[in-house]
Image (cartoon, rainbow, N blue to C red; front, side, top):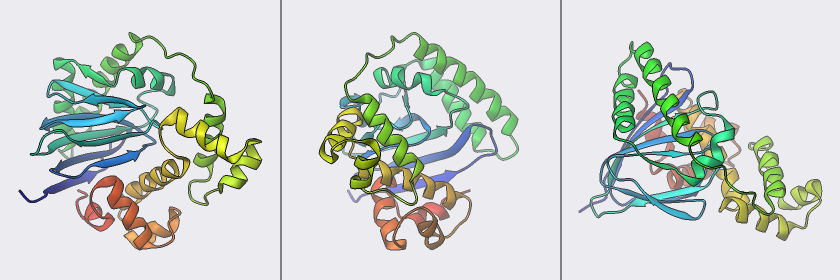
Length: 264
């Protein structure tokens, strides 16, 4: 069976929603990457297998998966027929950073009522003019998500977390301009090798992979705003359009031009 890829992406006029992304993949596998938004995921056909914080997870049909920002994860089909998924990316106004650790411990929520509500949210988000309904449904979904997460025990302290967080903050501040490992080590008063080990150990992803994920995340938003891939490459830290295309396709599954054309 030939590989099949279908994508649709748009940004609705609903506060707190940074992007809606629908996709059908048969063979594509996401490498380790991060988002700067919360990833609210449901799978309609097939199953996605993914690793989050070095623990393996899956997505049965009655499951809602909530992947927190800044935490590396990957994703691949668990069956030969692939999967069809719907994703809403949410900013920090809907779910706070204080819930990130709890979402890492319990990203897959077996809650049929929540699963049904997320499906209804997607239906409303797909209809221009129904933004009030979508916002109302999102409010109820957010409330139920917070209830789930607050019932989960807070995670224990992890070694080297302070140094890893400092490097993450530095990378976040220099997404476009970039920062070398040597300069990072000098600014954070750490040996370069120790810095890489601390970051990779804390987040399960190398610093350069994290930075590229952040750049691709910015590129997605600008493409949805209507900018051409060449323009996007120049303002998101990529050397040129080919550089953007290589990493964008690797992390999103389709080239930036096709992603932009899929926008509603």
